[in-house]
Image 1 (spheres, rainbow, N blue to C red):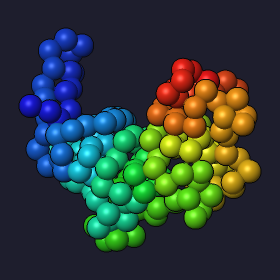
Image 2 (image 1 turned 90 degrees about the vertical axis):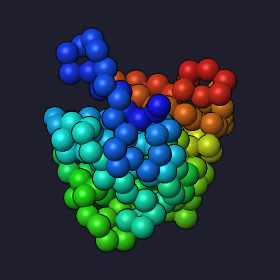
Image 3 (image 1 turned 60 degrees about the horizontal axis):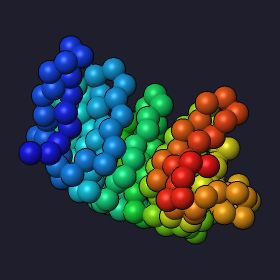
Image 4 (image 1 turned 30 degrees about the horizontal axis):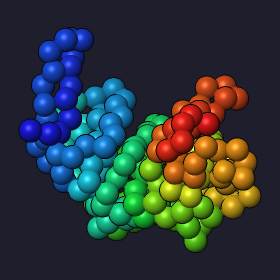
Length: 178
């Protein structure tokens, strides 16, 4: 069927898809009763534990409708899209074209296609098809000097996932974990 499978008791799962732009879900993130679903048809946002999603697309400022990953801190939502990293400071719940601000290669990312996003403190890590990009300004700006590639020891420039613990940064690449 597809959609977001949610278990509230640690056992049985219920599948939710109402309101999603696509049932092809690439990533999910949840905080309290808010669930974010990264899909191939936009970013689904549910404020009722997944019962009903509101879909966000390029019409609300996403860089692309294919969303591969999502992360949220407070009311700030970060979406890794095929057109860059899109950031909303109102929980993604606005309806106008400025709900999300998109950051792409022209803003300093090594590649348009963002595949993953992870946030620690004020630092935003974006895995792209061109390597890892790090913003130390919460995503407000991306300095091309903070990009990491195979020249810096990555197994591959195709970074499909990012995870950070303390000072350790773990990257899933096509050629292993960097």
